[in-house]
Length: 507
Image 1 (tube, rainbow, N blue to C red):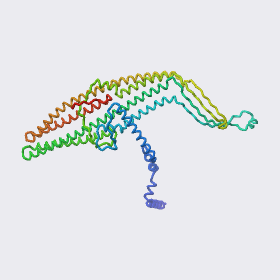
Image 2: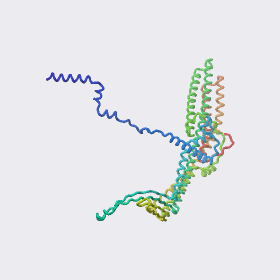
Image 3: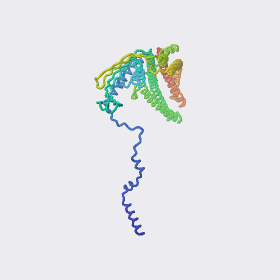
Image 4: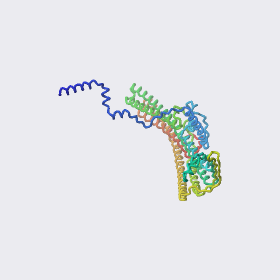
Protein backbone atom coordinates (compact mmCIF):
# COMPACT_ATOMS: atom_id res chain seq x y z
CA UNK A 1 0.00 0.00 0.00
CA UNK A 2 2.84 2.37 0.84
CA UNK A 3 4.43 1.72 -2.56
CA UNK A 4 1.21 2.72 -4.29
CA UNK A 5 0.93 5.95 -2.28
CA UNK A 6 4.57 6.86 -3.00
CA UNK A 7 4.03 6.21 -6.69
CA UNK A 8 1.00 8.55 -6.76
CA UNK A 9 2.95 11.35 -5.01
CA UNK A 10 5.85 11.06 -7.44
CA UNK A 11 3.48 11.30 -10.44
CA UNK A 12 1.75 14.39 -9.02
CA UNK A 13 5.10 16.15 -8.46
CA UNK A 14 6.19 15.42 -12.02
CA UNK A 15 2.89 16.74 -13.34
CA UNK A 16 3.26 20.02 -11.44
CA UNK A 17 6.77 20.51 -12.76
CA UNK A 18 5.55 20.23 -16.35
CA UNK A 19 2.80 22.90 -15.90
CA UNK A 20 3.83 26.29 -17.48
CA UNK A 21 4.63 29.19 -15.15
CA UNK A 22 1.90 31.28 -16.74
CA UNK A 23 -0.65 28.64 -15.87
CA UNK A 24 0.62 28.47 -12.30
CA UNK A 25 0.37 32.25 -11.99
CA UNK A 26 -3.16 32.12 -13.39
CA UNK A 27 -4.21 29.46 -10.90
CA UNK A 28 -2.46 31.38 -8.16
CA UNK A 29 -4.44 34.54 -8.69
CA UNK A 30 -6.89 35.32 -5.99
CA UNK A 31 -10.14 37.14 -6.35
CA UNK A 32 -8.86 40.35 -4.73
CA UNK A 33 -6.07 40.68 -7.32
CA UNK A 34 -8.53 40.14 -10.14
CA UNK A 35 -10.77 42.90 -8.76
CA UNK A 36 -7.78 45.22 -8.44
CA UNK A 37 -6.89 44.78 -12.11
CA UNK A 38 -10.42 45.47 -13.22
CA UNK A 39 -10.72 48.57 -11.05
CA UNK A 40 -10.95 51.75 -13.09
CA UNK A 41 -8.51 54.60 -12.72
CA UNK A 42 -9.66 57.14 -10.15
CA UNK A 43 -9.98 60.68 -11.54
CA UNK A 44 -11.14 63.89 -9.85
CA UNK A 45 -12.96 65.02 -12.97
CA UNK A 46 -13.35 62.73 -15.93
CA UNK A 47 -12.08 64.27 -19.16
CA UNK A 48 -14.69 65.62 -21.49
CA UNK A 49 -14.86 63.32 -24.50
CA UNK A 50 -17.35 65.52 -26.25
CA UNK A 51 -16.25 66.72 -29.66
CA UNK A 52 -15.73 70.46 -30.08
CA UNK A 53 -18.32 72.17 -32.23
CA UNK A 54 -16.14 74.44 -34.36
CA UNK A 55 -19.03 76.55 -35.66
CA UNK A 56 -20.32 77.11 -32.15
CA UNK A 57 -16.87 78.09 -30.90
CA UNK A 58 -16.44 80.56 -33.78
CA UNK A 59 -19.83 82.08 -32.99
CA UNK A 60 -18.94 82.31 -29.31
CA UNK A 61 -15.61 84.02 -30.08
CA UNK A 62 -17.38 86.49 -32.38
CA UNK A 63 -19.94 87.37 -29.71
CA UNK A 64 -17.22 87.76 -27.08
CA UNK A 65 -15.23 90.05 -29.37
CA UNK A 66 -18.32 92.17 -30.02
CA UNK A 67 -19.07 92.42 -26.30
CA UNK A 68 -15.45 93.32 -25.60
CA UNK A 69 -15.52 96.09 -28.18
CA UNK A 70 -18.78 97.53 -26.81
CA UNK A 71 -17.49 97.38 -23.24
CA UNK A 72 -14.22 99.08 -24.19
CA UNK A 73 -16.10 101.94 -25.86
CA UNK A 74 -18.30 102.28 -22.77
CA UNK A 75 -15.22 102.28 -20.52
CA UNK A 76 -13.48 104.92 -22.65
CA UNK A 77 -16.55 107.15 -22.41
CA UNK A 78 -16.70 106.77 -18.63
CA UNK A 79 -12.97 107.50 -18.28
CA UNK A 80 -13.05 110.53 -20.53
CA UNK A 81 -15.90 112.20 -18.64
CA UNK A 82 -13.39 113.47 -16.05
CA UNK A 83 -9.93 112.66 -17.33
CA UNK A 84 -8.29 113.97 -20.50
CA UNK A 85 -9.34 112.31 -23.73
CA UNK A 86 -7.10 109.38 -24.53
CA UNK A 87 -5.08 110.60 -27.48
CA UNK A 88 -3.62 107.16 -28.15
CA UNK A 89 -4.93 105.25 -31.16
CA UNK A 90 -2.71 102.22 -30.56
CA UNK A 91 -4.03 98.70 -30.96
CA UNK A 92 -2.33 95.62 -29.63
CA UNK A 93 -2.09 94.10 -33.11
CA UNK A 94 -0.36 97.27 -34.43
CA UNK A 95 2.25 97.58 -31.68
CA UNK A 96 5.86 97.94 -32.77
CA UNK A 97 7.42 97.48 -29.32
CA UNK A 98 7.29 101.13 -28.17
CA UNK A 99 4.54 102.40 -25.84
CA UNK A 100 3.73 105.56 -23.94
CA UNK A 101 1.77 105.80 -20.72
CA UNK A 102 -1.32 106.82 -22.72
CA UNK A 103 -0.86 103.75 -24.90
CA UNK A 104 -0.85 101.50 -21.86
CA UNK A 105 -3.96 103.21 -20.46
CA UNK A 106 -5.75 102.76 -23.80
CA UNK A 107 -4.77 99.09 -23.95
CA UNK A 108 -5.88 98.52 -20.35
CA UNK A 109 -9.30 100.07 -20.96
CA UNK A 110 -9.84 97.94 -24.05
CA UNK A 111 -8.36 94.67 -22.74
CA UNK A 112 -8.42 94.40 -18.95
CA UNK A 113 -10.97 91.77 -17.79
CA UNK A 114 -11.73 93.65 -14.56
CA UNK A 115 -13.17 96.55 -16.57
CA UNK A 116 -15.17 94.21 -18.80
CA UNK A 117 -16.58 92.51 -15.71
CA UNK A 118 -17.53 95.83 -14.08
CA UNK A 119 -19.29 97.07 -17.22
CA UNK A 120 -21.19 93.79 -17.56
CA UNK A 121 -22.18 93.94 -13.90
CA UNK A 122 -23.70 97.39 -14.48
CA UNK A 123 -25.63 96.00 -17.45
CA UNK A 124 -27.09 93.33 -15.18
CA UNK A 125 -28.54 95.97 -12.89
CA UNK A 126 -29.80 97.92 -15.89
CA UNK A 127 -31.96 94.98 -16.95
CA UNK A 128 -33.59 94.99 -13.51
CA UNK A 129 -35.16 98.36 -14.28
CA UNK A 130 -36.96 96.90 -17.28
CA UNK A 131 -37.92 93.84 -15.24
CA UNK A 132 -39.62 96.12 -12.71
CA UNK A 133 -41.56 98.03 -15.38
CA UNK A 134 -42.62 94.74 -16.99
CA UNK A 135 -45.40 94.52 -14.39
CA UNK A 136 -47.40 96.90 -16.60
CA UNK A 137 -47.02 94.66 -19.62
CA UNK A 138 -49.76 92.08 -20.33
CA UNK A 139 -49.29 88.52 -19.21
CA UNK A 140 -50.37 86.09 -21.92
CA UNK A 141 -51.12 82.41 -21.60
CA UNK A 142 -52.31 79.87 -24.12
CA UNK A 143 -52.87 76.15 -24.18
CA UNK A 144 -54.91 73.31 -25.49
CA UNK A 145 -56.31 70.39 -23.55
CA UNK A 146 -58.00 67.12 -24.37
CA UNK A 147 -59.95 65.18 -21.77
CA UNK A 148 -61.98 61.97 -21.79
CA UNK A 149 -64.45 61.71 -18.94
CA UNK A 150 -65.96 58.28 -18.19
CA UNK A 151 -69.26 58.85 -16.42
CA UNK A 152 -70.18 56.85 -13.35
CA UNK A 153 -73.56 55.18 -14.11
CA UNK A 154 -75.84 54.91 -11.05
CA UNK A 155 -79.04 53.92 -12.94
CA UNK A 156 -80.23 50.40 -13.62
CA UNK A 157 -78.38 48.27 -16.13
CA UNK A 158 -81.19 48.14 -18.69
CA UNK A 159 -81.26 51.94 -19.02
CA UNK A 160 -77.49 52.10 -19.12
CA UNK A 161 -77.37 49.75 -22.09
CA UNK A 162 -79.58 52.22 -23.99
CA UNK A 163 -76.82 54.83 -23.73
CA UNK A 164 -74.73 54.87 -26.89
CA UNK A 165 -71.73 56.39 -25.07
CA UNK A 166 -70.74 56.34 -21.42
CA UNK A 167 -67.95 58.92 -21.68
CA UNK A 168 -67.48 62.43 -23.09
CA UNK A 169 -64.49 63.82 -25.02
CA UNK A 170 -63.62 67.52 -24.87
CA UNK A 171 -61.20 69.62 -26.95
CA UNK A 172 -60.36 72.92 -25.26
CA UNK A 173 -57.97 75.47 -26.91
CA UNK A 174 -57.61 78.47 -24.57
CA UNK A 175 -55.98 81.90 -24.72
CA UNK A 176 -56.06 84.44 -21.88
CA UNK A 177 -54.46 87.73 -20.90
CA UNK A 178 -54.02 89.77 -17.72
CA UNK A 179 -53.00 93.42 -17.60
CA UNK A 180 -52.10 95.48 -14.54
CA UNK A 181 -53.84 98.85 -14.76
CA UNK A 182 -52.79 100.51 -11.52
CA UNK A 183 -51.02 99.38 -8.33
CA UNK A 184 -50.81 102.67 -6.40
CA UNK A 185 -47.11 103.25 -7.23
CA UNK A 186 -45.68 99.89 -6.20
CA UNK A 187 -44.17 99.17 -9.60
CA UNK A 188 -42.79 102.71 -9.92
CA UNK A 189 -41.09 102.59 -6.56
CA UNK A 190 -39.50 99.22 -7.39
CA UNK A 191 -38.30 100.61 -10.75
CA UNK A 192 -36.91 103.75 -9.07
CA UNK A 193 -35.03 101.60 -6.56
CA UNK A 194 -33.61 99.50 -9.40
CA UNK A 195 -32.60 102.68 -11.23
CA UNK A 196 -30.66 103.98 -8.22
CA UNK A 197 -28.97 100.61 -7.82
CA UNK A 198 -27.99 100.66 -11.50
CA UNK A 199 -26.53 104.16 -11.12
CA UNK A 200 -24.55 102.91 -8.11
CA UNK A 201 -23.19 100.01 -10.17
CA UNK A 202 -22.10 102.49 -12.85
CA UNK A 203 -20.07 104.37 -10.25
CA UNK A 204 -18.64 101.04 -9.08
CA UNK A 205 -17.58 100.36 -12.67
CA UNK A 206 -15.95 103.79 -12.76
CA UNK A 207 -14.11 102.92 -9.55
CA UNK A 208 -12.82 99.74 -11.18
CA UNK A 209 -11.65 101.69 -14.23
CA UNK A 210 -9.78 104.24 -12.12
CA UNK A 211 -8.18 101.49 -10.04
CA UNK A 212 -6.99 99.70 -13.18
CA UNK A 213 -5.58 102.96 -14.56
CA UNK A 214 -3.83 103.63 -11.25
CA UNK A 215 -2.27 100.15 -11.32
CA UNK A 216 -1.12 100.75 -14.90
CA UNK A 217 0.55 104.03 -13.91
CA UNK A 218 2.27 102.43 -10.92
CA UNK A 219 3.50 99.51 -13.02
CA UNK A 220 4.66 101.85 -15.80
CA UNK A 221 6.58 104.09 -13.37
CA UNK A 222 8.09 101.06 -11.63
CA UNK A 223 9.32 99.75 -14.96
CA UNK A 224 10.85 103.15 -15.77
CA UNK A 225 12.56 103.15 -12.37
CA UNK A 226 13.78 99.57 -12.91
CA UNK A 227 15.41 100.65 -16.18
CA UNK A 228 17.07 103.60 -14.43
CA UNK A 229 18.22 101.36 -11.59
CA UNK A 230 19.75 98.91 -14.08
CA UNK A 231 21.59 101.79 -15.79
CA UNK A 232 22.91 103.04 -12.42
CA UNK A 233 24.26 99.59 -11.52
CA UNK A 234 25.83 99.25 -14.98
CA UNK A 235 27.68 102.54 -14.45
CA UNK A 236 28.75 101.35 -11.00
CA UNK A 237 30.16 98.14 -12.47
CA UNK A 238 32.12 100.18 -15.04
CA UNK A 239 33.55 102.41 -12.30
CA UNK A 240 34.66 99.42 -10.21
CA UNK A 241 36.12 97.73 -13.29
CA UNK A 242 38.19 100.83 -13.97
CA UNK A 243 39.23 101.00 -10.33
CA UNK A 244 40.24 97.33 -10.41
CA UNK A 245 42.38 97.89 -13.50
CA UNK A 246 44.05 100.89 -11.87
CA UNK A 247 44.68 98.98 -8.63
CA UNK A 248 46.23 96.09 -10.54
CA UNK A 249 48.38 98.41 -12.65
CA UNK A 250 49.64 100.31 -9.60
CA UNK A 251 50.28 97.03 -7.77
CA UNK A 252 52.38 95.83 -10.70
CA UNK A 253 54.62 98.89 -10.45
CA UNK A 254 54.75 98.70 -6.64
CA UNK A 255 52.68 101.78 -5.79
CA UNK A 256 49.77 99.86 -4.20
CA UNK A 257 49.56 96.89 -1.90
CA UNK A 258 47.98 93.56 -2.81
CA UNK A 259 45.04 94.30 -0.53
CA UNK A 260 43.94 97.12 -2.85
CA UNK A 261 43.66 94.65 -5.74
CA UNK A 262 41.75 92.17 -3.59
CA UNK A 263 39.41 94.89 -2.31
CA UNK A 264 38.79 96.21 -5.81
CA UNK A 265 38.03 92.71 -7.05
CA UNK A 266 35.63 92.15 -4.14
CA UNK A 267 33.85 95.45 -4.81
CA UNK A 268 33.54 94.59 -8.49
CA UNK A 269 31.98 91.22 -7.64
CA UNK A 270 29.38 92.85 -5.37
CA UNK A 271 28.55 95.38 -8.06
CA UNK A 272 27.99 92.60 -10.60
CA UNK A 273 25.68 90.76 -8.18
CA UNK A 274 23.64 93.94 -7.71
CA UNK A 275 23.46 94.34 -11.48
CA UNK A 276 22.09 90.81 -11.85
CA UNK A 277 19.42 91.58 -9.24
CA UNK A 278 18.56 94.81 -11.08
CA UNK A 279 18.09 92.90 -14.34
CA UNK A 280 15.76 90.42 -12.62
CA UNK A 281 13.83 93.31 -11.09
CA UNK A 282 13.49 94.86 -14.54
CA UNK A 283 12.13 91.61 -15.98
CA UNK A 284 9.62 91.28 -13.14
CA UNK A 285 8.52 94.91 -13.54
CA UNK A 286 7.85 94.26 -17.25
CA UNK A 287 5.65 91.28 -16.35
CA UNK A 288 3.77 93.37 -13.77
CA UNK A 289 3.09 96.06 -16.38
CA UNK A 290 1.75 93.43 -18.79
CA UNK A 291 -0.53 92.09 -16.06
CA UNK A 292 -1.73 95.59 -15.11
CA UNK A 293 -2.60 96.31 -18.75
CA UNK A 294 -4.40 92.98 -19.07
CA UNK A 295 -2.22 91.62 -21.89
CA UNK A 296 0.16 88.94 -20.53
CA UNK A 297 2.10 88.92 -23.80
CA UNK A 298 3.00 92.60 -23.42
CA UNK A 299 6.65 92.24 -22.46
CA UNK A 300 10.01 93.50 -23.69
CA UNK A 301 8.48 96.82 -24.72
CA UNK A 302 10.34 100.10 -24.97
CA UNK A 303 8.92 102.88 -22.80
CA UNK A 304 8.78 106.29 -24.43
CA UNK A 305 7.77 108.28 -21.34
CA UNK A 306 10.02 108.97 -18.39
CA UNK A 307 9.30 109.89 -14.79
CA UNK A 308 7.52 113.23 -14.61
CA UNK A 309 9.73 115.95 -13.16
CA UNK A 310 7.13 118.74 -13.15
CA UNK A 311 5.63 119.97 -9.89
CA UNK A 312 1.87 119.65 -9.30
CA UNK A 313 -0.21 122.61 -8.23
CA UNK A 314 -2.47 121.24 -5.48
CA UNK A 315 -4.49 122.63 -2.60
CA UNK A 316 -6.08 120.39 0.03
CA UNK A 317 -9.42 122.18 0.29
CA UNK A 318 -9.85 122.19 -3.48
CA UNK A 319 -8.88 118.53 -3.63
CA UNK A 320 -11.43 117.66 -0.93
CA UNK A 321 -14.22 119.49 -2.75
CA UNK A 322 -13.32 117.73 -5.98
CA UNK A 323 -13.35 114.34 -4.21
CA UNK A 324 -16.76 115.00 -2.66
CA UNK A 325 -18.14 115.85 -6.08
CA UNK A 326 -16.29 113.26 -8.21
CA UNK A 327 -15.19 110.28 -6.09
CA UNK A 328 -17.08 107.29 -7.60
CA UNK A 329 -17.11 105.25 -4.37
CA UNK A 330 -18.75 108.15 -2.51
CA UNK A 331 -21.31 108.74 -5.28
CA UNK A 332 -22.06 105.01 -5.35
CA UNK A 333 -22.76 105.01 -1.61
CA UNK A 334 -25.05 108.03 -2.10
CA UNK A 335 -27.05 106.19 -4.77
CA UNK A 336 -27.36 103.13 -2.54
CA UNK A 337 -28.66 105.37 0.25
CA UNK A 338 -31.25 106.83 -2.13
CA UNK A 339 -32.24 103.32 -3.24
CA UNK A 340 -32.70 102.25 0.38
CA UNK A 341 -34.94 105.27 1.01
CA UNK A 342 -37.07 104.41 -2.02
CA UNK A 343 -37.28 100.84 -0.80
CA UNK A 344 -39.13 102.05 2.31
CA UNK A 345 -41.76 103.63 0.07
CA UNK A 346 -42.01 100.41 -1.91
CA UNK A 347 -42.48 98.34 1.25
CA UNK A 348 -45.24 100.65 2.52
CA UNK A 349 -47.11 100.53 -0.78
CA UNK A 350 -47.27 96.76 -0.55
CA UNK A 351 -50.37 97.33 1.60
CA UNK A 352 -52.28 98.72 -1.39
CA UNK A 353 -54.34 96.54 -3.78
CA UNK A 354 -53.87 95.99 -7.51
CA UNK A 355 -56.31 97.04 -10.22
CA UNK A 356 -56.04 94.76 -13.26
CA UNK A 357 -57.95 93.72 -16.35
CA UNK A 358 -58.39 90.16 -17.50
CA UNK A 359 -59.78 88.36 -20.49
CA UNK A 360 -59.91 84.88 -21.95
CA UNK A 361 -61.28 83.04 -24.98
CA UNK A 362 -62.15 79.35 -25.12
CA UNK A 363 -63.25 77.19 -27.99
CA UNK A 364 -64.05 73.50 -28.19
CA UNK A 365 -66.37 70.85 -26.85
CA UNK A 366 -67.05 67.41 -28.26
CA UNK A 367 -65.55 68.75 -31.47
CA UNK A 368 -62.82 71.39 -31.64
CA UNK A 369 -65.24 73.87 -33.27
CA UNK A 370 -68.40 72.89 -31.41
CA UNK A 371 -68.70 76.02 -29.30
CA UNK A 372 -66.78 78.98 -27.92
CA UNK A 373 -66.81 81.24 -24.88
CA UNK A 374 -65.07 84.30 -23.57
CA UNK A 375 -64.83 86.53 -20.54
CA UNK A 376 -63.29 89.85 -19.67
CA UNK A 377 -63.47 92.28 -16.81
CA UNK A 378 -61.68 94.40 -14.23
CA UNK A 379 -60.78 93.29 -10.74
CA UNK A 380 -59.48 94.85 -7.53
CA UNK A 381 -57.60 92.38 -5.40
CA UNK A 382 -54.96 91.83 -2.74
CA UNK A 383 -52.41 89.12 -3.45
CA UNK A 384 -51.59 86.95 -0.43
CA UNK A 385 -52.10 89.78 2.06
CA UNK A 386 -50.20 89.12 5.30
CA UNK A 387 -50.22 92.22 7.48
CA UNK A 388 -47.62 90.89 9.90
CA UNK A 389 -45.22 90.07 7.07
CA UNK A 390 -45.74 93.45 5.38
CA UNK A 391 -45.16 95.28 8.66
CA UNK A 392 -41.86 93.49 9.24
CA UNK A 393 -40.79 94.13 5.64
CA UNK A 394 -41.30 97.85 6.24
CA UNK A 395 -39.21 97.61 9.41
CA UNK A 396 -36.50 95.81 7.45
CA UNK A 397 -36.50 98.52 4.77
CA UNK A 398 -36.11 101.20 7.46
CA UNK A 399 -33.21 99.36 9.06
CA UNK A 400 -31.51 98.96 5.66
CA UNK A 401 -31.89 102.69 5.05
CA UNK A 402 -30.26 103.48 8.40
CA UNK A 403 -27.38 101.18 7.49
CA UNK A 404 -27.03 102.85 4.06
CA UNK A 405 -26.89 106.28 5.72
CA UNK A 406 -24.18 105.07 8.10
CA UNK A 407 -22.23 103.53 5.18
CA UNK A 408 -22.44 106.83 3.30
CA UNK A 409 -21.12 108.77 6.28
CA UNK A 410 -18.32 106.24 6.71
CA UNK A 411 -17.44 106.63 3.05
CA UNK A 412 -17.27 110.41 3.47
CA UNK A 413 -14.84 109.99 6.36
CA UNK A 414 -12.77 107.53 4.32
CA UNK A 415 -12.60 110.02 1.45
CA UNK A 416 -11.37 112.76 3.77
CA UNK A 417 -8.72 110.48 5.26
CA UNK A 418 -7.53 109.14 1.90
CA UNK A 419 -7.34 112.60 0.32
CA UNK A 420 -5.45 113.95 3.32
CA UNK A 421 -3.06 111.01 3.33
CA UNK A 422 -2.40 111.21 -0.43
CA UNK A 423 -1.93 115.00 -0.22
CA UNK A 424 0.61 114.71 2.61
CA UNK A 425 2.46 111.91 0.82
CA UNK A 426 2.71 114.05 -2.32
CA UNK A 427 4.12 116.99 -0.35
CA UNK A 428 6.59 114.76 1.46
CA UNK A 429 7.88 113.23 -1.76
CA UNK A 430 8.08 116.73 -3.29
CA UNK A 431 10.22 118.02 -0.43
CA UNK A 432 12.32 114.83 -0.43
CA UNK A 433 13.19 115.34 -4.08
CA UNK A 434 14.81 118.70 -3.36
CA UNK A 435 16.90 117.24 -0.52
CA UNK A 436 17.92 114.12 -2.45
CA UNK A 437 18.80 116.21 -5.51
CA UNK A 438 21.24 118.28 -3.44
CA UNK A 439 22.67 115.10 -1.85
CA UNK A 440 23.12 113.61 -5.33
CA UNK A 441 25.16 116.60 -6.47
CA UNK A 442 27.38 116.39 -3.39
CA UNK A 443 27.83 112.62 -3.73
CA UNK A 444 28.74 113.00 -7.39
CA UNK A 445 31.39 115.60 -6.57
CA UNK A 446 32.79 113.40 -3.79
CA UNK A 447 32.90 110.38 -6.09
CA UNK A 448 34.79 112.35 -8.73
CA UNK A 449 37.32 113.62 -6.21
CA UNK A 450 37.84 110.14 -4.75
CA UNK A 451 38.35 108.73 -8.22
CA UNK A 452 40.93 111.41 -9.10
CA UNK A 453 42.75 110.93 -5.78
CA UNK A 454 42.95 107.18 -6.32
CA UNK A 455 44.05 107.73 -9.92
CA UNK A 456 47.07 109.76 -8.86
CA UNK A 457 47.84 107.48 -5.94
CA UNK A 458 46.71 109.72 -3.07
CA UNK A 459 43.54 107.84 -2.12
CA UNK A 460 42.97 104.21 -1.11
CA UNK A 461 40.46 101.54 -2.14
CA UNK A 462 38.28 102.03 0.95
CA UNK A 463 37.89 105.75 0.30
CA UNK A 464 36.95 105.06 -3.34
CA UNK A 465 34.45 102.35 -2.34
CA UNK A 466 32.74 104.63 0.20
CA UNK A 467 32.49 107.46 -2.32
CA UNK A 468 31.22 105.15 -5.06
CA UNK A 469 28.58 103.55 -2.80
CA UNK A 470 27.49 106.96 -1.56
CA UNK A 471 27.04 108.12 -5.14
CA UNK A 472 25.17 104.92 -6.01
CA UNK A 473 22.81 105.29 -3.05
CA UNK A 474 22.32 109.00 -3.77
CA UNK A 475 21.26 108.21 -7.33
CA UNK A 476 18.85 105.48 -6.24
CA UNK A 477 17.47 107.69 -3.48
CA UNK A 478 16.83 110.57 -5.87
CA UNK A 479 15.11 108.43 -8.48
CA UNK A 480 13.20 106.58 -5.77
CA UNK A 481 11.82 109.87 -4.45
CA UNK A 482 10.95 110.90 -8.00
CA UNK A 483 9.18 107.55 -8.44
CA UNK A 484 7.25 108.04 -5.21
CA UNK A 485 6.26 111.53 -6.32
CA UNK A 486 4.76 110.16 -9.55
CA UNK A 487 3.03 107.30 -7.75
CA UNK A 488 1.65 109.64 -5.06
CA UNK A 489 0.31 111.92 -7.79
CA UNK A 490 -1.46 108.92 -9.39
CA UNK A 491 -2.83 107.92 -5.99
CA UNK A 492 -4.13 111.44 -5.40
CA UNK A 493 -5.92 111.38 -8.77
CA UNK A 494 -7.47 108.04 -7.84
CA UNK A 495 -8.77 109.12 -4.42
CA UNK A 496 -10.32 112.37 -5.73
CA UNK A 497 -11.60 110.77 -8.92
CA UNK A 498 -10.27 113.56 -11.14
CA UNK A 499 -6.95 114.73 -12.66
CA UNK A 500 -4.65 117.16 -10.85
CA UNK A 501 -2.99 120.11 -12.54
CA UNK A 502 0.64 120.10 -13.51
CA UNK A 503 2.66 123.32 -13.24
CA UNK A 504 5.58 124.53 -15.33
CA UNK A 505 8.00 124.34 -12.38
CA UNK A 506 10.76 121.71 -12.66
CA UNK A 507 11.61 119.64 -9.64
